[in-house]
Amino acid sequence: MKLKVKWIALALVAVLLAAGAVKMVTSKNAQKQNLQAQQAAQANAPSVQLAAKDVLDVQEIELQQGLAISGQIKAVNSAFVKARVAGELRELSVREGDFVKAGQIIGRIEATEYLARVRQAEQQAQAAKAQVDIAKRSFENNRALVDQGFISKTGLDASSSSLAGAQASYLAAQAGADLAQKSLDDATVRAPISGQISQRLVQSGERVAIEARMVEIVDLSRLELEISLAASDSVFVKVGQKAQLNVEGNGQTISATVARLNPSATAGSRAVLAYLSLDQSAQLRQGFYAQGMLATGSQRVIAIPLSAVRTDKPQPYVQVLADGKIQHQTVELGSRGEHQSQTMVAVTGLAPGKKILAGVAGPMTVGTAISIEGAK
Image (cartoon, rainbow, N blue to C red; front, side, top):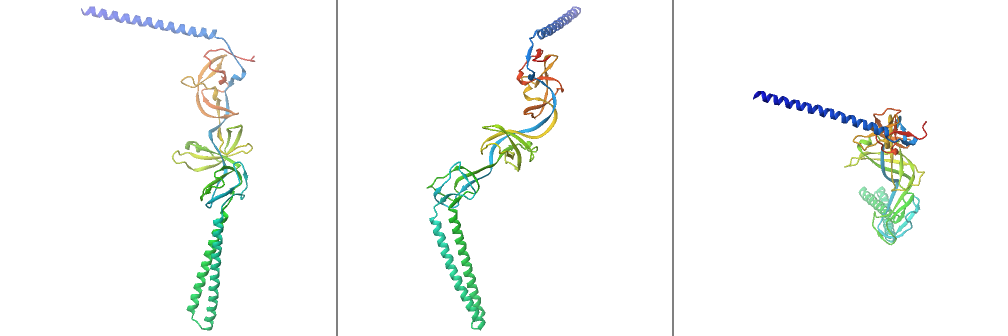
């Protein structure tokens, strides 16, 4: 019985080994047939003709590194004109877009009350001045009597104190008159800076309170771009660095220079604000939105146009032209930057001199034959 079981086990092992051998041979034949089919497909694949500009040479270049930036344009000098005294606005002679000069009269607040206060304060100062004259004459008379021995020195001291008190009252009344005159002057509204009116917030006839905003003046002679930088990016930004910007509504590129960096980070976001002075050769306005690239340095690397990198596979790759056919080569991407007005990316895995397809050529399968228009 044991011998029979042993022979059955040996037979099963032999059957399994035979089945494995058959499967291996079948798999090898299938792989060989697939390889032959691929080679045949590649050999019979039609040739694709490309323009010379669709094929790029991999080169080692000086890559300008930078940060993408954006923000709103603001005037360096702007001011809200506020009412310094309360009252009815009798006149406001400027509207949006009007040009004004520093010190120019642009409005008037009803000044009857303030004029009356000036007259009152002046009368009080005159009364106080009269008391000073009386006290002064009394002091001089008492001093003469002390010299003649008719009164004691104590009486002279009392006269001196009265004179000092009268003089102090006169100075206080005079200060009150100056304050009343200032309030009267403040009823005349003047432009604090030169520029253009950007907002008119009140109308003639309205009653305005102290510190009420009436107009906003913007000086467009000096504009700057305010940008927000991440803490990790702010360490690469220095005063004097250059940037190229595109402004909405303006087709041309605007040059800018980092003028100032805020020494403190914004609470919460920990962002750092930077301010770029703008080239005023273009017609710009406060509130325009601008974006562009701030140059932070350069390095010499092997780089290709970012548009030539394809990402429709798990790993980024480029389409390499080798022996007239397309090959897909995986690359490792590095830093990005600008070169000859084109966004470039540093790559690892490509040698200088290799030819790759530009992004405009589109995706192509491995083995596609390529002919270049005009090539000999």
